[in-house]
Image 1 (cartoon, rainbow, N blue to C red):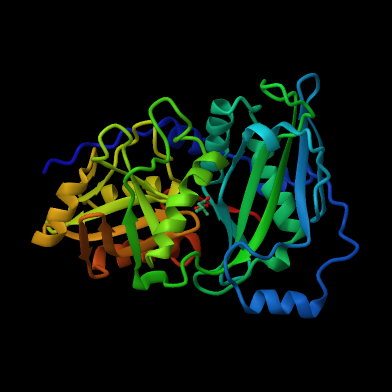
Image 2 (spheres, rainbow, N blue to C red; image 1 turned 180 degrees about the horizontal axis):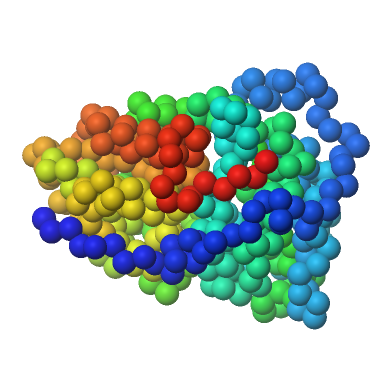
Length: 382
Ligand code: COI
């Protein structure tokens, strides 16, 4: 198999542009301290039982956009319920986008994030598709800096832990006519988190869905917008009833090629060492973890190929031994081995392989500051 050179994508190019230091950006979102933060016992309980995405910190960052005035009202305020008119457009037409990014505690106590410029570029890519306003990348990063500085104590410190950051933007204009909203709110909230999959590096099982699709050509598949995830929920629930942890979607024309999981990209490691992943067809999400893995593997001289991958070929390859490992990746999932892949007429199992484990370790070593970062991907927040 010939490895084609990876051409940097627009998100990768924009994401690699230099950013001002956190100290230079800090203060754009002034803090009004929460007067009723979590009581100490509650804080200790949450930090002692880290799960994923259920508990949130004391504050949130916010700004508002209007068609006439652009972005204003930047602030960090107490985390709490939003006041939203039932006529807000997002509740009717789902005009919203979000990001997933993490804050990591390094051994010396400092707090870092990973490729914030990439997430800034991606929220703008998603916003463009959903007719939402663009955000100045430095405002995006400043919102993370000011939010994390307000809630630094919520960044956990153990292996596999982080403060999962969830920036999101939605149409808050009170109007039920279908048009791009003239009032939009942007928030950053954060959840102190452990692993997304409790099975972690032991492996998860995947049901390959037929009959339901996540996205189609020209649709919103490459945007990080809630509707794509909502579309995955019914097949996901059906797969869970069968005992599977996640679903994998196929292309919507032929139901032949792998696209992505409910919220993660998918990779194959071939027995000859080559690593393959579905190409960016405009239908799948361009994952930051996907991009980092492609770059790291290519730099280590591994053959990396982005191309259409037929399900039949994968099943046959697993049975014959030609496909040695399959793994999922994403900000939340990091790198998670897939140890069982099943669908209507097949059910195959795999071992957790050395390449998957090595990629997980090399990536998390950079993110956690245990290894040098030759790419300039880590960004100090605190
Ligand atoms: C992430 O990986 O950050 C996502 O947004 C995906 C979601 C399944 C949690």
